[in-house]
Image (cartoon, rainbow, N blue to C red; front, top):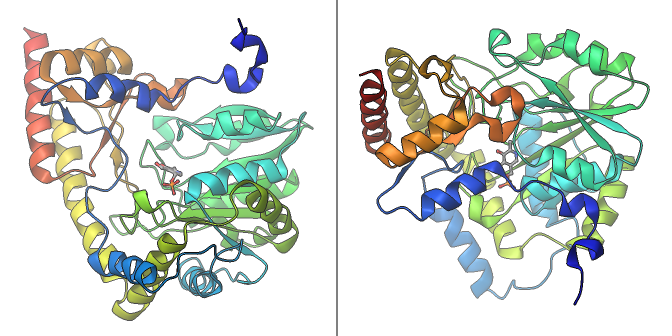
Length: 395
Ligand code: PLP
């Protein structure tokens, strides 16, 4: 008999499964469950983008691309980023097309982090950062963000968490799960601390296109002195409704990309070819029509966002205004339950699934994450049921 526990890598073996998935596996077993849990667009990929991938397959473009991805696509990404974040990357040496932002994050951590290093991870945050950092042998150090700061990074707490071992910091705005955004003026307060301590920045910008209410997205890479130490990670999943295509990218100065390239080359070879053609069509069409598809989806998210936040606040689930991504992060403390108790009780009583905030770190434990990447009808129905649930508990 093999003792499997003893043959497995202890770091991988002891990683906790994603708290989002754990909850949804339970929800998936329930009939007619209304879910506001999943973090992916309800829109399907615009038809023209899909057609470009189909055409590429039928034209016989079914082989590997260059390891770094189609040069045409890297050029289009360079053009896009130049316009969107005002940072210029060389398509030949500073951009790699990856299998989603997920691969880009993994490769970035593996290129930079080594045993003994510490990486600051502000939380609540997306679930993959700390486990992926741990796999490199480095230590993820969480730094809490607070609702009083609208879940932006608290620069003083970042400074306090820095030790001689701190190698890097993760910056992820608009944020999953809070919907918080750090605008240029906020990032300008953080940048001097990063420079003073010679930190590398992992900037997860996957929700950069999804900002509302007059917010202008700012990449930390665009601030003075930051491009040379920032690794920009993004992709097509969220803004272009392309989660299933698995297409992302990573941009950084050449010496960093040279190392990411080796990791990507050995581990992945290249991102799926047909998906690269779909992404190329997405960017080319967007250059022509002024990002009309993205704008249309953004408008719909915004409408749902306003409706959701107003109703949550009206029913006593305090929710600060999320100005980015497609999540609201209301506090459920007033109900006498924490996020996990609330989510289970709601699922049990009303068959509505939301994600306990603790899945995103301890500081989220009194919150729940509600995604508004669902139709207005689904959101309305779920909110009616949440309201009923709260009223019944008051009795
Ligand atoms: N970063 C954040 C903050 C996310 O929320 C997600 C997906 O939910 C990802 C990265 C991964 O995106 P992709 O589908 O491009 O791998």
